[in-house]
Structures are given as structure tokens and as C-alpha cells.
Amino acid sequence: METKQVAIPQKPLRHFLPQDLIIDQWSTIESYYKDLNNRLIGSVQELEKWLQDRSELEAVISEDLAWRYIKMTCDTASEALTESYNYFVSEIEPHIAPYSNDLNKKLIDCSYTDQLNKAEFLVYFRGVKKALEIYRDENIPLNTKIATDSQKYGAVVAAMTVNWKGEEITLQKAANLLKDTDRKIREEIFFKIQDRKSVDTNQLNDLFSELLQLRHQVAVNAGFKNYRDYKFAELGRFDYTVNDCFDFHNSISKEILPISAGINTKRKEKLKLDVLRPWDMDVDVDGKPALSPVKTGAELIDKSVECFYKIRPAFGEYLEIMKAMGHLDLESRKGKAPGGYNYPLYEIGVPFIFMNSVGAQRDVITMVHEGGHAIHSFVTRDLEITDFKSTPSEVAELASMSMELISMEHWNVFYDNADELKRAKQEQLEQTLKSLLWIGAVDKFQHWVYENPAHTVEERMESWMRIINEFSSNVVDWGGIEEIKKRGWLSQLHIFEVPFYYIEYGMAQLGAIAVWRNYKSNPEKALDQYEAALRLGYTKTIPEIYKAAGIEFNFSQAYVKELAQFVKNELDKL
Figure (cartoon, rainbow, N blue to C red):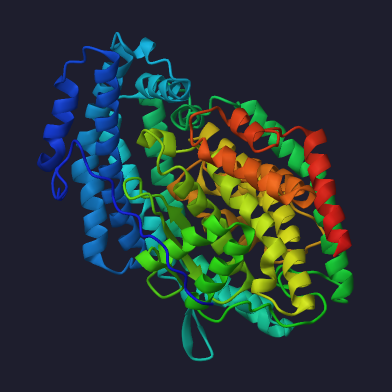
């Protein structure tokens, strides 16, 4: 497509920090924290200026850390890039934590804080108060070790490759072969992948055991019974409880699993198989080759830009800006960390998208998903303070997962063949239901893990097996390879790096289905509501933001059933 001219955003002029500040050591920025901590605040106006200066400092530091993380994940083999990231985490961040706590105290104790009666500050203040409640000096070195150790997971997984026809390929590329119409090839690649993963099973279990104990100690130090309860406080889960999560698990298993079982039964029948095995789950049921919407990362970018322009011109411009600024790294390669993310850059306001494209339909989903996050970054870039832009995951993932479904209406950009377009949509809707089951299992597993911190590795593996079976259809036969199923959780990056950040995907998935349902009924109104909700950032509660989007924040069995039935009806139409 023809590249359009777009205005490239510039970093706003700094009013507190030097324009050319380079953060190379703690002493470079300590004076700014001291300034904020020692500054006298004599009016509401001075408090507002203090908040703006603190926000500027936090945006600059956050962006510095962001680039270190981005560069490290783009090339995990580089010791220099890993060292740069770890230096920040171990030598700079630990100094920031006590100052941040002192600044929080200063804010809450300030006599003018109560006079700052802007409604958007109420949500921010409750988060600050909770952070004060759980802060402990003794947790600083523990959190530093957790941050550095958890990154070992990405390095271990990034090094995993298999040999296929004389070529060393990443596991992402290998997984694409599970769509091959030749069942023998699928089975062979399935076991190659699993055999490679098994090599690091003990190493990853040991790593998790170490992280588990460190996290449990953090919780105990902060006065909590377990890390689950501590993490709920740290994540600022004010708008729902542990029991709401259990309700979510129950609703998903009761309402989604029967539909998924039906889909698997149809798959087994269409493939004319006596036994449906794990390597039969991704192949096209009509014997057609795997969908290949793009050949290169560059093509994925261009077609995604075109797709977003069709949804709403401003959305296309956002991706165009990221392309022009080099804020996209999409193709899979050896040494690149697994997964995909949109990393917000709070000072410039233009995020960075990272993913591992191999030319598969899944790449389209990842791109539009992260593109939804990018939209969120752009529409919140002018909010007053940095914390307003840092939305809870239940809201952040609503932005991304809604875009997965909304964008389907314009996937003709990727597929000019009507049959392939239909297949792509069908895959997406089936995956939407399937993902809810996986999310339910991962979240329930984490509850068990952290409620029982003294468990053994074998007990952990058995617990996962019990839980994943609660969310799995027995149509798929794992006979003889139960050990592979038992270690399935080891493939979930979030469990290692960002514990408990996962159920948000499920809550947001339900919300996204509701947004898409609105879009099918009235596209422009639904988009207006979607964008209005995102523009709020985190200045309202989660239920209020969902309401602005024209949907409910609700995981009751009745509501889940209603949304699941809508997806099933749309699948039936295809």
C-alpha cells in the first residue's frame, strides 16, 4: 500500500529534568527525587506542579527502562543488552523504591491533597494509599532478585530450537507445521517440539521454585498470609475479589467447555479420525493448507496499517507513525525472546510492538491485538500525569482483545479469497472460546500454587494436571503422553514473569465479545464508545470504564452464557 504522510510526535519539552539527561547511574537522578521529597508545598497549585514534576520524572525513568527491556528481548544472546537491563533493575530501581514510598507519604500527608478535588485523582489516590500499606524496605532486595531471575525464563525459552529438514528453526516456526495436512508430519513436529521442551523441564521447575519462595517471603514480610493476597493488593484489584475469580473459573468451565467439546467432536468427525490427538488440533478440518496471510514482517505491517485505516483512519495513522519511527520488531528469529507485547513509552507517547511473526494467521491476531494496545497508548498520551496512562490490565486487554474481533470485519485486506477469509474468522472465534478455558486453568493454577507455597515439584505438576482437566474436553486423547500435558504450564510466560497477570485476558475477552456484539449492531457508535472508554486511561474504576465502552464488567454464569451463545451463533453463521 502507499505510505501516507504522518506527523511524527516529538517528546514534550521537559520542565523539571534536563532535555539531554542520560540515566547511566543512580546518582544521575537522585537529586530530582530529593528535590521532590524536600520541596515545600504551600498551595493546591504548588501541589499540582509537584505532581506534574513527579510524573515527568516517572515517565522519563519508565521509558529508559522500557528501551533496555525492548533491546534485551530483541536480542537475548547479547550479554551487553542483558547487562544493561539488569544494571537498571539491580543498581537503579532499588534506590527508587524507598523514595517513591516517601513521595507517596508526602502526597497523602499533604494538607492540600484533599482540596485537589478533581474526580480523576480519586482512583489514583486509592492506589497510592494501597502502595503505602504494602511497602516494606526489606522487600527491595527480594524484588530486585525476582526481577532479574524471572528474566531467565525468556533466555531459556528463546534458546529453544529444533532441527527440521536440516534447518534449525525456532519453536514458533515449528509450531506452524502443526497445521500441515500430513498427519505424520504433524505428529513428528509435535514430538520434536515436546522433546526439546523436556530438556529444560527441570531447569524451569527449579527456576519457578526459587521465584515461588522469593515471592512468598515478600508477601510474609508485608503481613500477608500468601503471595496471592499480596499480589491482589499490589495489582490494585479494588473492583473485584478472589471469590469473583473463582466465579469466573466456574462460569467458564460450565458454559464454555460444552461448546468447545462440541467443536472438538466436529473436528474429529470432519478429519475422519477414530482418535483425536493433540497434534490434530490446528490443522484445517477440510484438508486445506495452513492459512498464510503474509510472507514477511514488512507485509504484515503494511496490511495491518491498511486494516486499521478501514476501521478508523486515526487508528491507521497510529500504526503508520510507529512504522516510520521504527517502533516495530515483528519477525521471529533465533535469540529473540518468545511472545509478543506492546510496550508503552510514557514520555514520547508512541509505544513499541514486539512479536514473533512466522507468516501464520496467528500473527495477524497478535498484530491487531498489540495494535489495540497501541491505540490505547496514543489516545492517552496527553493525560495529565503518567499514572493516569498506566491502566489496569482488565482495561488494557479490553483495548487489545476488542480489536481482534472488530478487525475481523476488515480482514479482506489479508485474504482476497472468500473461503480463506471465512476460515480465518472461524479460527479466531474458536480460539476465542478456547483461550477462555486456558485462561481459567492458568489463573486457577496460580491460586493453588501460591496458596500452597510448600508444595513439591511433583505436587505442582499433579495440581496442573487436575486443573487443566477441569477445563479440557475429553474428546482430545492424551493417552500415553500425559507427562507432556502435565508440564503444559511451563510454556506460559506470565506464570514466571508476571504472576497473576492473566485472568485479565479472560475478563477482557468477555468484554471484547460484548464490544464486538455492539459493533455488529452499530459500528460507529461502538467505536465511539470503545475510544471514549480508552481515553479515560485510569481515571475511573474498571466497572465505570467498561460502562463507558457500552458493556458490563460481569463474570456471572448467566452473562458468560449469553456471550458464549452469541459467539456460537456467529460461528454457526460461518
